[in-house]
Amino acid sequence: MKRVILAAAVVFLVGCAPGKTPGGASGPAIAVSIAPLAAMASALLGNPGEVATVILPGESPATFDPGPRRMARLQDARLFFACGVPMENQLLPRLRQGHPMLEIVDVTTGLPRATFAGHDDHEHGDSDPHLWLDPRLMRNQVRVMAGDLADMFPERATPILARADSLEAVLMDLDRRLKDELAPVRGRDMFVFHPAFGYLAQAYGLRQVAIEQGGLDPSPRHLARVLEGIKAQGARTVFAQPQFSLGSAHAVAREAGIRLVVLDPLAPDYVANMTAMAHAIREGLDESD
Image 1 (cartoon, helix red, strand yellow):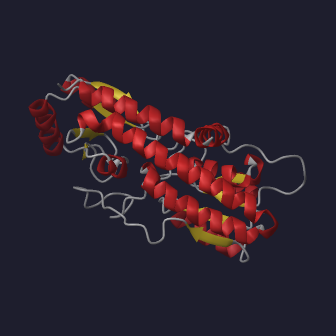
Image 2: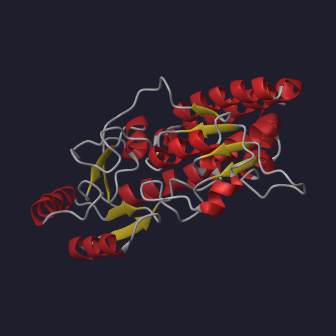
């Protein structure tokens, strides 16, 4: 019976990629910075149409600047779930000024934050915001969202909290599956162009090695050091993400004689995407044998 409930929760979660608002004059009551968290909020509410996602597929939270149309979509929001991505530094003051009654909740408050190792001048600052890439930390964020949603919609509190229990079980099951998937490559270096995967790497015993420096292409000296590490390890794969230009990543891969694999940390189908990324990482690192 438990497996049936978990399976149903996974299907519902995958189907809850943020969608359009249902018919009606008002926009979504809930706004979220990124698609993975929006999918969780949608699953908790049972209706993707109640959630607006600020950053859409292909857009980068490091460089995104919401225009008037995107801001207008947020005008009816009563609750905003933030997670510490860079664009919130510009967005949240504008929201507070234009919507003083809007409640803004940082779902990552109190969670341990890592730094970008080896990046003293990263565009995110010292703190790595990609906490959602560890299912255990995502579980904490689901708890925060569920509590705030239950407070906002007291008449729906019981189903919201029940869905939260199901989602937490799904995330713990995901964590176990990712551990099994990545166990054979535990201890390996994971060469990435942009250092977005630190929490995922740390959770499953990998070491993230970033190629870019401070959000910029690597200097010749740093690139030479990275290429030396790639050669020493016999690595055959470098990982990049679609939110950034892949031209430099392709150039580095060609120079190193290795292949480039694209991982999307912002895909809305969280469980499916984390599963697919773990499989791609294992395949990429297994090739280093």
